[in-house]
Amino acid sequence: MPIAFAYTLIVLLIITSILLTLLILLHRGKGGGMSSMFGGGVTSSLAGSSVAEKNLDRYTVLVAVIWFACIIGLGLWLRVTLNS
Image (tube, rainbow, N blue to C red):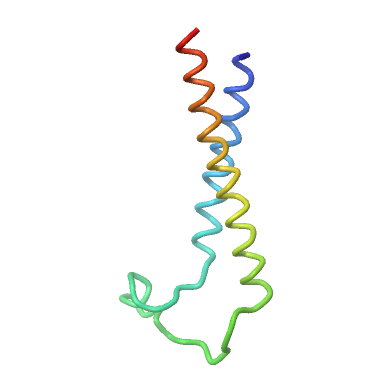
């Protein structure tokens, strides 16, 4: 396999890692944990998830799947390259 494939996966992995970190940080806390220790534990009067939260969940899962595929692709590329 060409080395450009590995470089493409590495760049995609870096981009998805940054995006995944940002998307996870955008999620609202569900109570408990570090956010409630520093005064972030105020509950909202709105019940249920909004459309924005559901879309944020979908985007997070999509980016996580792409991130995971990059990890698997790099591992397979490395295995093929080292065995050749």
